Image (cartoon, rainbow, N blue to C red; front, top):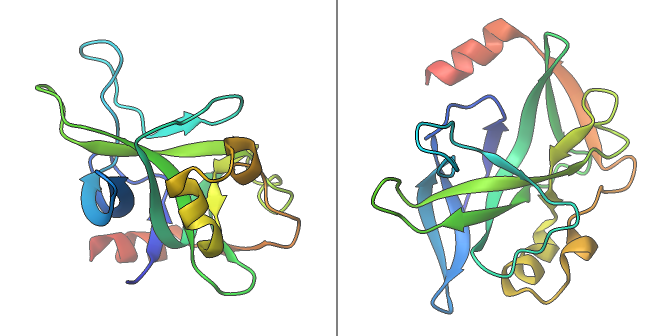
Length: 168
């Protein structure tokens, strides 16, 4: 399996591989990003605030090698300082008559490495924690929390380079 760059500005509906439990089996499926809006005609939501919430079912993880974020008009990329790849904690929803099966990523308070650029970040699950999230062997507050300072390295990316990467 390979992990790829996750752009937080990706369009709703962009498809990505997610890993989940479904009927007791572990499976990798490709789902669109964005859950059904609460009101008819509303905007789909791609992230869900995790604080003080529980997620008893429909958990998933989204593999990534880095995440990209825009802050004050500049583009930044964040990857693990040790070079490893990781997962985002997410949830998925079954298809309805009006909406396809889809996923969203959980967000938490930004860790000290991301905080200078944004006050929130997508919840990162280290590879060794993925089964604890999927199998619910640890409570949410144990996994969905900012990682220690020095976990991420940040670099500025150019808009031109980003556009060329998105063109592929």
